[in-house]
Image 1 (cartoon, rainbow, N blue to C red):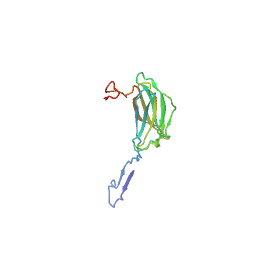
Image 2 (cartoon, one colour):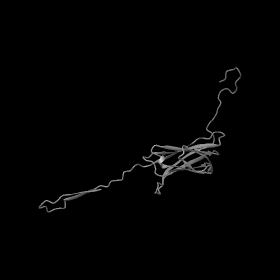
Image 3 (spheres, helix red, strand yellow):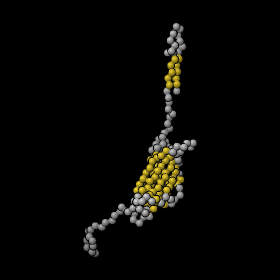
Image 4 (cartoon, one colour):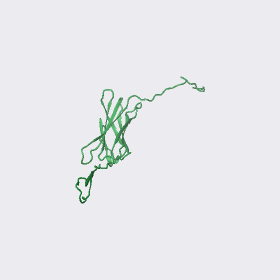
Length: 185
């Protein structure tokens, strides 16, 4: 923006250089907010005899506006020993807004419309993985592109380990043998 002021010369004035002055100020376009996302993941431990381990992948909107393009999450798991893929058996989204690829699969891609991810919103989906050893399950997220745009913004990565031996332990303490009618500790 430029604003100028000018005064007319008075009779007999010889120096007219100071009769006009302008001020310029650049005004930034107001920012209606910035989207920002965070990704978390938590996997349950394996129970003895369990055939699957469940992991929850959560997308949290931490910004001041919702993204204008879709939010994408790509998920895959590999065995810690050897790096072989671990198959994703099922996917259970927390609502109908999610669209996910077919399962079973070695990798899964899910998306949710950015408009759903208003500030403070948290959305998740659960995946069940074949529990055939200790694995690391990692999800990567991004949002965009917005309509008419080609920029994809990375959210980051969240990983969790699961599978393996059960962490539940049963231990009997007390008398090795109890007799009927006798106190037992």
